[in-house]
Amino acid sequence: MQQDPARYVDGMNLYCYLRSAPFTFSDPDGRASECQVESFVVSKKVKLPPKIVRGHSWPFIWFLQERTSQHLYSFDVDAKFSGPCPKCCEYRQYVKGTLEFDGKPITLKSGEPLFADHFVEDGGANGYGHRELPNVKGLDEYLPDRMTGDTYHAHDEPGILETPPWKVSYDIRIDLVFEHEIVDKCNNGRSVRHTFSRIYEEEGYVSIP
Image 1: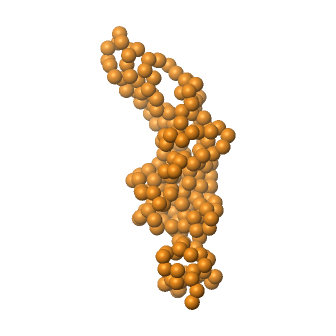
Image 2: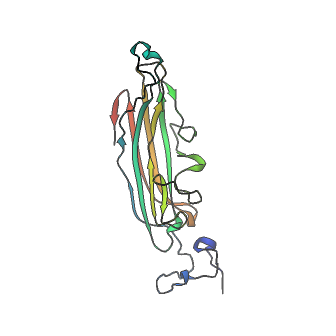
Image 3: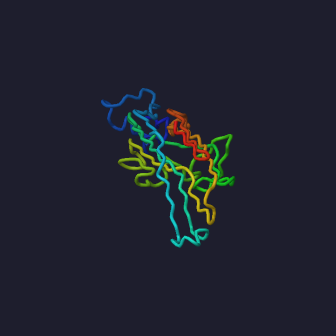
């Protein structure tokens, strides 16, 4: 009797074959553990309504009022995995582009720097889809459980949320390109599915591809 050549991808028991279900699964050489994607959908980007919060209501001190300006978008990612090893599948999200508020570069919500010419993982070390991290309900979630779930959902609201303390008008620039990817953790992280999306807004002009 030999150990599973794929090691621990099917569990801690290296001598368990076909999950003890030989009439259900087939694995002639012991290496059939892989990510299989049934569906993978990234929803169209939707701009959220603007939000302005005023700290004072007296007109003659408008320049002291706190005003929070919201330029946020919303999108969802949904994936369904099939086959005997859904836990091999993990979602990844990468982003590149520009976020500027009155000429000032804005970092990502995670605090990670944003680059115009190359992708970085959105969220950094706590990025989307890593199964070793806990589920975040409605935002980054595998079901029925994090480690073995065959259904994934993510929700993101990228954009700019800034508080100009005195200006009535301001310039913004949002130009973000996202790469959405399903990787196979059981086979050296190879890419199984991927797609791209973009958000663009500048000086009041909005375009949602």
